[in-house]
Image (cartoon, rainbow, N blue to C red; front, side):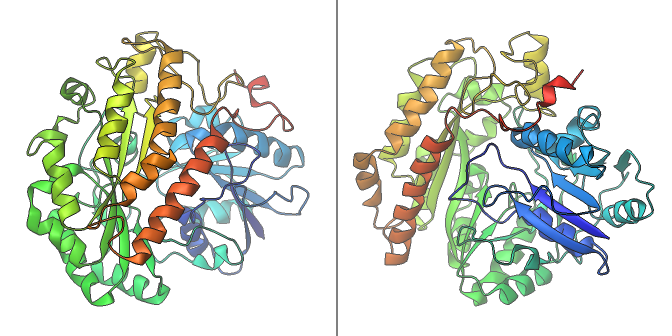
Length: 445
């Protein structure tokens, strides 16, 4: 039996900042050794659509759903079954089942081997779902599936899954519920030792869902003398000793969701804990004095935002010499409370923007209260371009404690910013999917 794993792209173009899609290394490890597997990442390469295979498996995000459905139509027209998993099929299994033969809801661990055996015997079920979240102990991704592919020089490692917070725009809680799981620290450290990578990205949605366990991890990382990055919630800045331990264990940068400079917006998005212990300026200083570079993210479109909100956020990011920053239109996605709220209020621009051929990447998907949808789109693009000007790049680079702390960091800073600017310009305004592939809307009821 042969399985073809596919990571769909947003559109027809190629990406210069693609990172290893770790989920496929996990699927590879879970697949019986007597099954032949191949993997294609559309961000890097064309799909050999005529290549013989017995089963196609895709992990689908909301932004890649349209493309995934188009690809599935081609394989299914040849009689090849298609199975889909990931966030989007988990939240919208009925939609996905109109384009796939089977859908896996939730995590693959504990259920993927059964999917493979059912496909092998020609008895693939329509829906696969388990009642319990499986333990992450023993998880060891098989990265051989990435051999020969050119990804960003950053090694992805997962420590845990889930988030203790429940922001209204986020789908993480809807996917994992209250489940907060971590791998044994010894297994994570052993994996990192084997990888021998200079730069590791801990991909957890929030590394601090369990602070005592996080401390155990950081202390275990110190002897490895690696550089690592992560995604964290800003509230940990209240504990300066914890932030210093992060830096001591090798942390050089952290992605932090600031989201908004307006407290009322933070309350509306259920993220007022961002400023519960410190104001933003104080929290930024804690991280930067510890030598940690900040990748800040902001969203616009909440009720207190106006056309003037964009410049204030960009100026804040530039003045504080953020390593990187992103300025996104608030985008309601399936599974998040925000989507249901805006749908009930009849404020959505599209009925399923991810399938609508009129939607373009980077454009507003709903009608904000403090500006028009077009102003939201234009404001976010203007903010991204302003942050990535040459003047901003030079100003932010001159940060001896963080961005230019070492020649390695300065090189990382310059390369990351150049790639970020290029990808912003490349993706903005693109339609999702492909004009050359079957139109999924034609079969969607």
